[in-house]
Length: 230
Ligand code: CA
Image (cartoon, rainbow, N blue to C red; front, side, top):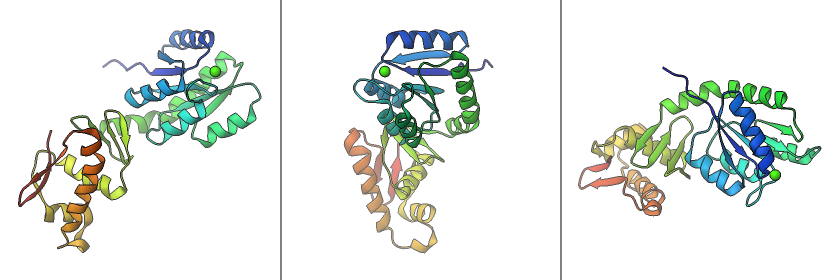
C-alpha cells in the first residue's frame, strides 16, 4: 500500500509568502492547500482532513488566534502559528489557544521544516487511531474517544450522556432498541425502571441533531423504543 501524502494547509494572506511556503513544502514531499483569510480557512479545516495547519496570525476576516481557538473546540489537528517578528504577545496567545508550536517571521526554512516534522511525529499515532474508529450515519460523523460529533463537517455540541446515548444508537444502527435495553446499556442498573430518562434524552438529541439539520436520524418505533437508520 502506498503511504498517504501528508497534506498541509497554509493559511497566509501575503501571496508571496504563501507561494514560497507552498514551493518549499512540495519540494519536501508534502501536498499543500492555501487559504488567504481566516474565515475560509476555518470552513475548510471543518470539511477536510489536514496533517498540519500553518497559520499566520494577522489575517483578514478572522485572525489566526481566533481560528486556532475555534479549531481546537473540535479537532486536535497540529497547528503551527506564524507570528510577526518579536510579537511576544502573539506567541503567548497562540500557545494558550492550543497551537502546537510557532515560528517567527522572517523564518529560516530548515527550521520551519524541522518544526513541521517534529510536530507531525508527535501527532502521528493518535491521529491514525481515531480515524479508524469513526462511526458514520448519513452525514453524521462520530469520533469515539474524543466525544465529538459532526454533521456536514459542523461540530455538534453534546453533553457526555447525550453523546453516550447517540454512540450506543449509532453502534447498533438499523436495530430497534427498546427503552429498557437502552437504559441498561447507557445509564446502568441503578436507573432500572426509569425509562422516562431515555425519552427525555432522545428529545435533547433530536433538538440538537434532527431539528437544526433538517435530517431525521432518530426514529421512534411505537410501543417499543428507538432506532437510528442509515
Ligand atoms: Ca498576514
